[in-house]
Image (cartoon, rainbow, N blue to C red; front, side, top):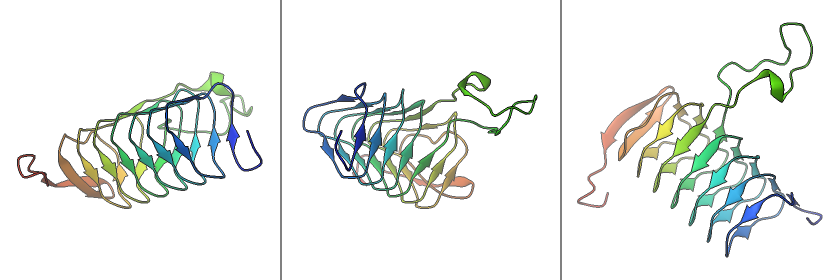
Length: 163
C-alpha cells in the first residue's frame, strides 16, 4: 500500500496488472494484463478477468464476476442487494449477517458504457454491449446491444461481420 492506493494484503493481482492512483482493492482478484483506472473500488469476493479495462470511478462490489476481455466504462455501478436497508427489523444498524450477497456475471468480451448501473442477479452475455447510462435489470443475451432505463434490446451484433 502507498499514499495513493489502498490495496489489502489479500488481493490477488495477476501479471502485468496496471493500477492507477487512488484505488481501493480488498479481498478481490484481478487477472493478467488488466488495467484499473483511478478512483475504482473492488470489494472482497469480486473477480476481474484477464485483459480487462475498468475505467475511473467504477464500483465493483462483492459477488461480481467479470470474465476476460471486458470493458467497463467510467462510473459504472454494480449492486449486490435488491432491497438494501440501513437497519434491521429491530432498528439496529445492519451488518453483513443481515443480508445475503446477490451475484452478477459479466461474460467474456462484453462492454459496459459509462454511467451504467447493473442490478444484482443478472448475467451480461458474451460480447454484449450495454449503452452509457443504462440500468440493467435483467439478463442480457450474448451479442445483444442494450440501452435505456430499464435497458432494452436495440439489436444484435452480427458476429460474422465482427460488429
